[in-house]
Length: 202
Length: 160
Image 1 (tube, each protein chain N blue to C red):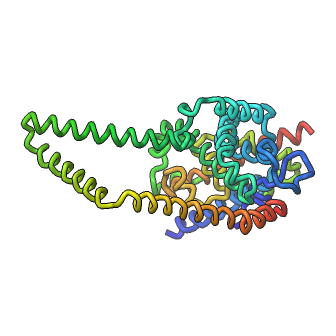
Image 2: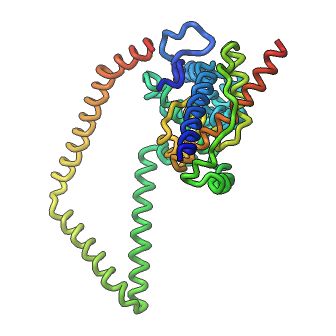
Image 3: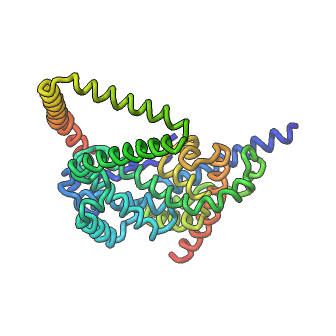
């Protein structure tokens, strides 16, 4: 299943239309990928200030491997993977505290606990521009608890499978599925409410 | 039984619909703009790291001579500590330390005997030849990488 229609990895410089040339130096290289790295880190960590720290660390590491990355077609993928892993590590430092409690509530195989009541609209945010949609979704994602936002972002934006997410987060497959379902169910009313506000204002 | 099955089917259908809705809402979102301060922060961090003296950097970034010297010193110190420690224990009457000291001494004796069998000139010639072959192999690899791999990956980068 194709989750996202857009290219998951930014391969062209942002804000310029001269993206045909390969990056010449590290600053050009950084400008080419900083939006993608920052967006990935912000979505996974759920915090802009943490995302800045993570993005900084990603580019410092990229500088150490710049000889290999500067001419590589897979540089975007490398940066995205490092940004995702660093952001997960960042969240994990705080996650240990809540994991014990969330595992208590959604023990392995406890599918019944995950039943969700919600009213299905036919379409969601489809009448908004990509920018408006982006602002609403990013804000709603930030408000989700870590244990729901993390697997949701890894599934929908990073296009990882349930198994890969479970391995990355060190939790069971059932928990990943349950958290993603709960995340979606929590995201839906938040998106609907934000959409209603947006429509009223405009 | 049937009720439970119906409930399950309904739940599955609802989940699929929810997934479809959220996937649609999250698809094709534009990237967020990185803060202007990010570039300055990265460059400042790189400058700060570059200004550090070599002994305060990561071990992998130390000069080769310093790394070799450090490893040799560590091996020497570790060897001295273990040997002197065991010798001390053996002299204090710790019976179990004696065979260990004996084995280590035998190992040292065998190594020095093996080294004494190698004529020094042949040893150094062999060592030099090995180094030369290693450099040759490295050079061929680097040449092949630059001529065969780099042009194609640059083309892929430009066309992507």
